[in-house]
Length: 263
Image (tube, rainbow, N blue to C red; front, side, top):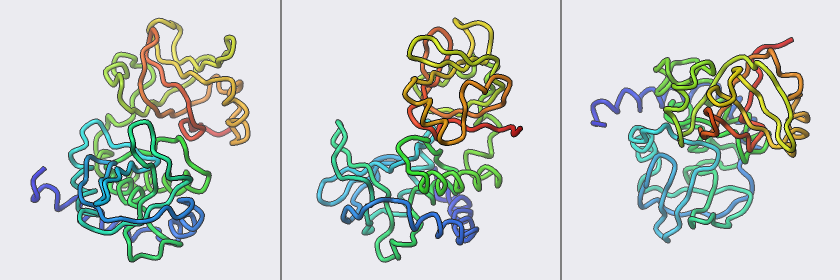
């Protein structure tokens, strides 16, 4: 993306960061976890990955950029390239790829009431919330940032195709292996063995479905979602598209599903 095309987005980002600061501050005070240290960003690898001068590779917790990460990388570069950052998280153990997962805050800010880089990317509309691996406070903070971008038509939300229709399995399947949002009415909710299924069509081998492992049912119930009562309800799910007959999303976190209609 050229600097000329990027400037309007960066200007919009600056405006977005002044909106609803009280909400962000109140949520942020309890979000992010323990202080894991700090470092200087020497490289922005992609739209959610940084490399520090000491060689550590940092993956931003809780967000994922769209399949085209060019814009997300450009915004992230403008935010943190060659700057000191503070890392917060549950632990500093690397994943199997050697990356440390963390919330990232620009150094020099009050990190007890901070705006994470994740929030800034979400509010610019260049990332989506994953819905996994987040505390309640962090989930609320990131969801509020994503909702702002959605309502403002910011970034990727300027496109009407961000949310896929559950009744269009071919469109969903075109996202195979990528992160997607899918919305629709649950036709049936049933359990088979150790797995619960939300079906959005009558044909298992073709239509879209959500896979819910049995051990997640209790966690969803604690969040106010009774999976056995979702038939006939309109929901939005998010996750990586798999193919098991038709297109599927498997839930790995309670934040991946939201009930849209209220009774």
